[in-house]
Image 1 (tube, rainbow over the protein chains, first blue to last red):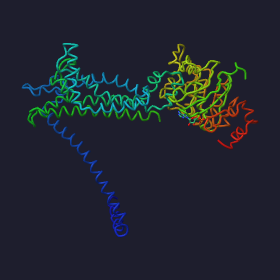
Image 2: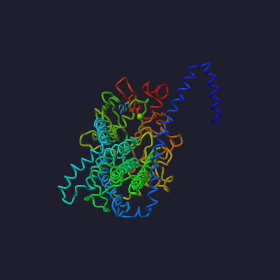
Image 3: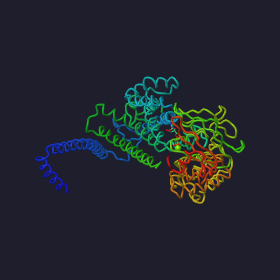
Image 4: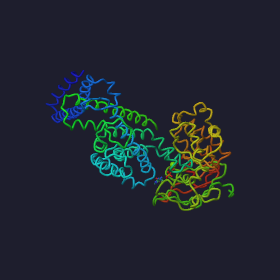
Length: 316
Length: 257
Ligand SMILES: Nc1ncnc2c1ncn2[C@@H]1O[C@H](COP(=O)(O)OP(=O)(O)O)[C@@H](O)[C@H]1O
Ligand SMILES: [Mg+2]
């Protein structure tokens, strides 16, 4: 079939060459463009496949030496010490503390500011604030990291002497601030997509603006808002600089937000930047941790896509 | 018409969107427990006029009015009046059915709930659905989504939703324009029944509909750039058999519009 069309095309182009040179040139050009675009698409797909397979390959090598059971259930993570333990739970609890803390900050604030922007703000205010939010979303995270370490942590330490120089709390708060614009902007998009006719229906029943927002707009936009939250969580789980700078590099199996901890991402940075020789078991840990992190965020992205798809069907 | 027979009145009402007049100098009485139709070519300001009766135009930032709208003799636009209070008493049904993406029950219960209704909610929902001639069709699926209903059912649900707050007036803005003829007839029958207890104002561009259901008819027409004005107002029977203004006659016989 493909061959047929190709031979057909060559015979056409041969004819076109003699009869319609302009047409022939255009065909060639079209083909070139299509090839270039296809090549670009293939490159990006191949890179992703490459990254994932390296991750998988190295992780498999790691799990030939360390049992998956120990990896998933152990509560001590000391691959760089003389007495090696490979329990990932301390890294996971650290990731959970910082991400959950960030969501505690970003969720209510993000939702409130989305309600304000979508339902209350006059048009000029919204048109002014939206780009500001997008600029905030563009601040490099290393800046947020030092903001946490040099500004928020000292403040926390003044409030409570129990807070260490490196701690999960400060990192959570600042990470929450970092993902706030995203939560608020995406939630606002979801809320503005709720048809005006629904708002009018609620107003016509005697609702106040607050009732319209909380009882009609938010429920109708709920799946979009949920998708925004899930994206934000997966962003927090994958965030590296802030936690590496402000939360510490001390894998402790704890839920205490005042003490130094180490998240999965921070651990990967620590090993990649340190002098651990490549090829050793210690070095392979970063692929096992990376794979765990990858699976975690992949699951969350799939979940958010599923939720968004349901959201699209809602007002059909 | 005597004062006490009119539940809603406008006095020299002019509505502006920005600097543009949408309707001007409307003086009109809406009879209690009757159906009043507003007809006229599209863009002449029928919806605009209707939306003054429950202050829905307040939601459009650059709209303003001059003149008066009276509800039971009380100025609806006086600064002491809370528009949300007004909307409990003057309900509205829209051109396209707009049920909330909630269950059938929650749609009907929406108004009573925000209104702080204390009585038996299930009973109120049932009686409202029954009044909207929908109970028999939905009584076994009250918890399923309102969006699964047909267009005609959705519109009757919206009527039930409006009835549940126990209003005195129901405003309907072309309530059948997105429905098929059978659903349209069902809604028209329903309106005739409801007019025993409610005062109804219906906007329609369908003259047969106005002739079939309404007791009074107002013919509105846009004049130059002053917006819609009342050309003729009176008993539907007379307007349709013996119009006084030749423009009314031209419109109802379908010569323009
Ligand atoms: N929100 C609005 N902003 C500005 N102009 C409007 C708005 N709504 C309606 N208009 C204008 O007011 C006039 C009357 O509109 P409308 O009341 O919707 O007429 P009808 O319901 O008779 O078709 C039209 O010229 C329309 O363009
Ligand atoms: Mg209209």
